[in-house]
Image (tube, rainbow, N blue to C red; front, side, top):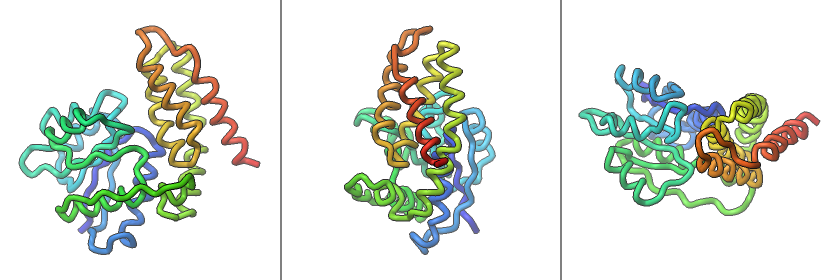
Length: 244
């Protein structure tokens, strides 16, 4: 019987990466059970899914459109009797916040973007009831080796899907700027920084990270002085190069 895994993730590209990764599970670890993946995109839908029960593993992004996954942990979803292990995705946590998540029941935190091997080892280990060992970071700049375990076909499929979805990111970013909505702009940048790193665009990923930080520091009703225009043009250029 397949293990039921709940993924709480609003970014379509990251959700697709997890889906593609889990398709590699049988070849990566023959002792791990097959996985049936279900996706929800916000806290409200996560609460409904968690109430239904029957999950063997939960993976959640930390930042969601309607709040933080810390709210779910604070409600006791990872500590209740019979609760499945929880894995939290985050682009970066300090030691204090990492410890707080662990106290609330998070079995593991993974840095976005997580390499394929680390994700698979974590899922397989937790489904077997064992703590997953840390995977050594792959040196170098080749995203195929660094993030996809050398699987070029998987990388190219993921990259092409991301570039196709950049139109949605551009529309959301433009709408946030037009509406003076720094929180919405921060969410767009937050999602893009991991995706751009996964597809081997560290310069654009850094731009997204700086824009996210600048948007977070804005007072209500204000926007960062700069940042979105250059990042948006970079996304357009990636799409144009891909079509050639």
